[in-house]
Structures are given as structure tokens and as C-alpha cells.
Image (cartoon, rainbow, N blue to C red; front, top):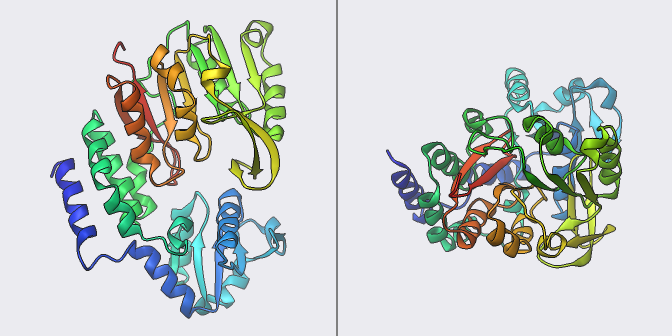
Length: 374
């Protein structure tokens, strides 16, 4: 069965009277209503992010649990963390959401010990009041199908289909295992020369820059790094200071985010992500069209927590002028998986578009745009 047939069958299901949204999340809601407690298994950054999102939606998580004994008895985000033995005592009364990257091992652990209502991850978008997943997908049907035609290889089209199934049907995270390809941002189709001018948007503490410098064997023209978080920016500057002078002299780091306008914003952060919000720490975002107006750019990477489309709109002139290689994250918002490829294609129709996935979780799916001249 080809990718067009897969999509056709998926939408036949969505359009049917039997479809009433993601069945996994429907089961979660039913389980929450009948069980006394809810628990996030995994008290790291993933668990904290899910817990915070649940709070904003008015969904109370009663406990964390973790296999790390050092977390037992702690209050994490004002939520107590149970030991595994304590969790076993309420086995028949608890709904568990696995919120850790080693989800397969945890799922096996819980299944072997007789836990029934166990879910991997929690897409809190689906829990928003008034949100209809069926309506959302059907309203975007034509745009979703258009992207399938734009993708240039079977691997990308299969991954695209599985991401859509994850949204619509809640397919397990196991489905992403076969698409886990490293290195992130530096796939074989991204052919790097010794005169690259690299722009890292969402530079964090410099991990992608480190990998870039390694891939070009220290031979490049320049690196521009943009990081909104002051805390991450300070670590980025420290990490860049360890490079020799011939590398440092070809890098510039800016403590700003990127968007479709120049303005002050508020952001919130945890161990691994910085997200623009209505309240929090004040920061600044800029348009790449303004910040890099006279620069010749050859490669842009973006991982900016759901602001990728906005950032691309702020780089419209830069992209159409330079036609750089692009590596843009498309997993933060449901619609990113189709809206970002469509927007890139609208800027430069000659781009060859492909998708790759770079983690065991359903995070880290990246859309790559390969210039027609490569």
C-alpha cells in the first residue's frame, strides 16, 4: 500500500461516524474518571512538562513516581514523588502516564507487576476544553495531503504517516523506533562545505554548534547563535569560550529568540526547554531578516519550542535571498508537521523536503529542506 492510500484510509476512518477523536486519550479520560489517583511515572524534564501542562488545564496529577531512589519523598512542582513500593500499594486505584524516555522498560515493569491503566506520554492539547480533534484534522485535510506529495522519499512519507497516526489514533511510541536516525541536523542529504555560514536558532548551550564544528572539521566561515534563555545563554557563552581563538573569532552569540517581529516577550523554562508564554521572565525576540540582513547564510537550524513557523516568517527575505539548507523542528505543535513544509515550499518551491526522526520519544522530528543546487 502506498503513502497516498495510507492517508486515504486514515481520513476515511476520521470521517466515519465511528471516529470520536484519539481513542487512546478517550481511554485516558475514562480511566481518570473511574480511578482515585493519577501518577506520572518519570520525574524528570518530560514529567515536569506534562505536569505543568496538566495544571494549566485544571487536571490534577496526584503523584510522581520514579525508579531513582534519590527522588523518593521529594515534592516536585509541589507534587509528591512515590517510591515504586508505595505505588504498588495503590495499584488498583491509579492511572499511570509514563513520562520518561525509557518508556518501553517502564511499560514492561508496570505490566509485569499487574498495572492496568498505563499510558505512554500525554498529549495535553487533546485535553483542552472545546478542542475537537476530528474537526481539526478534517479542516486541514487538503493541506495534510499536499505535504505528502511534497516529501521526496518513502522514508519521509512513512514517518509523516506515523506522526499523523500518532495524532489521530495515539499509536504507541514504539512506532517511532524504526525512524530514530542520528545525527540530528546533520543527515547525509545535508552536505556541508568548508565555507558554511551556520545559524543556530534555539542554540541552548551549544550542542548543535559543537556537532557542526566537528562535522566541518573546524573549517567554516561563521556561526550565529540565538538563544532566548539568559540561563542557557550564559552556559552557551561559557562553552564557546573553551574553543581556540580561531574558532571563537568566527562565532557570535545573541541572547535573543527569533520570531516574525522584533519585540519583548515573556518566557518560562525548565531543564531542557524555553517556551514563550504570557507571563514569566522577560526576554527579546528578533526577525532574522533584520538581525542578519547583510549576511550570506548557508545553513539554518531551528528548535524554538513551537515558534518555528513564526521564526521562518521572520526570515522570509533571508531564505529567498540565500536559499540556505534548513533543518527545522516540526514536533512542538500538531500542525507544524504540515504547516512548516508548506511554508518552506511557498518560499522556495525548488527545495527538496524530507523528514527524519531523532529520538525514542515522539520528540525531535525535523523537516530538512535541501536547496535545488545541492
